[in-house]
Length: 446
Image (cartoon, rainbow, N blue to C red; front, side, top):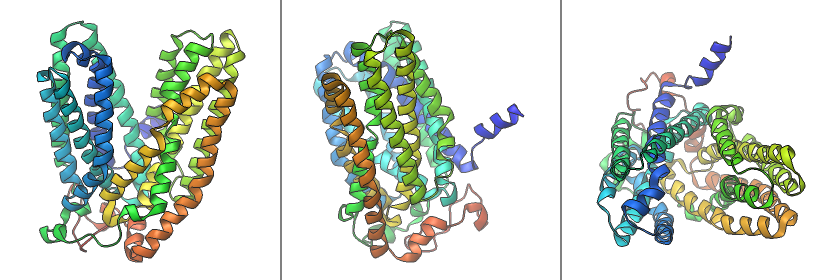
């Protein structure tokens, strides 16, 4: 019975979900391997100072922010699968060049190029998964893919850790080449996926202007993603504020940090599908947001109490604070996947992905500085203010999602919205899952 339960958990919801999960694992394996050794690679191989590394990453982040919407429009014009494969191949080529970069200017150019190409891949990936997965399976499938992604990052960190253990510059040189090979395999795997509906457009369809107003004219979509960005500051709590608090404001041993991040990794591998269960529309997604926010606030309350505790009580509470903020991450992920499917114009998913990325960035870019200042300088009052920010965002996202939905109902034909929410799967249409879906309309939505 236990074996059957485990088998049900590891089995993908569908064949396509399994193939997309394999792609997620490949991407995270390559990315995680390079990220693990990147600090040493940039300083010891490229010869940069820590300040130069930080400045380059800032420039790259600005470039990604500016490129998000144009890259999304490219996805709408040329199709998500094509642009996703192109991005993966482009990233493979960029990783292969890293060992030949020897100065700051080359590093900045590479970092900016990687982020721009990555912005194209992010928009294409999001548009493809919504376009290709049947509506009734989207949240469950993406939860499964999220588990595979976290498993891939775990394996990547192990590979990177093994490489660092050799204390050899020759091995460090090989890290980006290993990642390049993985990304090239990933790009090949993407080309073998079934075409999404919008990949079947004719050349005439691609040249035609996309009907309807763009995402920048949809205030509900922009506001909803801004508030979602605020919710995603749970990652700042997880990776920055709680670890700093542990080190500077509690008597907990520093080795506890390893157990905290290990717990987060295990939860994000095994629990996404459980958190996503029952999330199948706007009302249930908003309920998941409320649960996520409740976990976030609970984490703040638990963590602030550790300032005055000692010994094992501190260790237990810090660990529990980390567990609850991971719960916030899991429920928010489930809600976010539903918002993407329900609040986008199905004919402009790439552009909506790009605009959402821009707005979401504005919602979270301020958090590392603000949260760190509040927690470290204002103590309990600061933690309560952090929790208060999340409560306000939780209240505000309810009218913003309704505003976004009303915008779509005014500007998108009813049959297009209905098809996007209730269309049948490949299997129900009698189309094999490894074959393209017939293009029945100029802007087909599955």
